[in-house]
Image 1 (cartoon, rainbow, N blue to C red):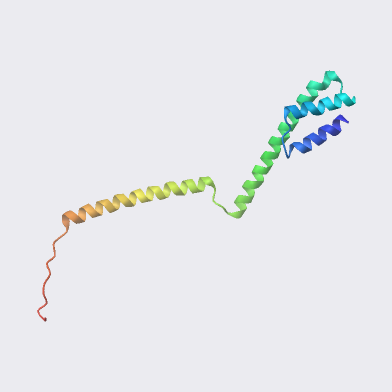
Image 2 (tube, rainbow, N blue to C red):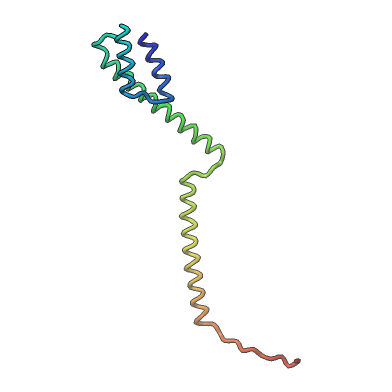
Length: 122
């Protein structure tokens, strides 16, 4: 019976993490039913809780890897890619601004005045 409860708790831990209180409650029910001795209750509850946490971590890692694979297969830009492009655009805009500022100040100082000439054919 204890193995059956462990399997159910481990299966359920993939969907919702088993809390320490829930693990203790499951073991208390097993003690009442006579499937677990009182001396084993605290270690069994701790073991159940620890296994649940570990399974939850493993499931989270599996899901994370699968999501990363799917995003990569779709060809979507990662957060890192977008941040790199934002830095590049900011750098290019700063360079353009410097170039534009240099050109406008040099044109003002070296610009020749043009006088309008009337055409002789008027």
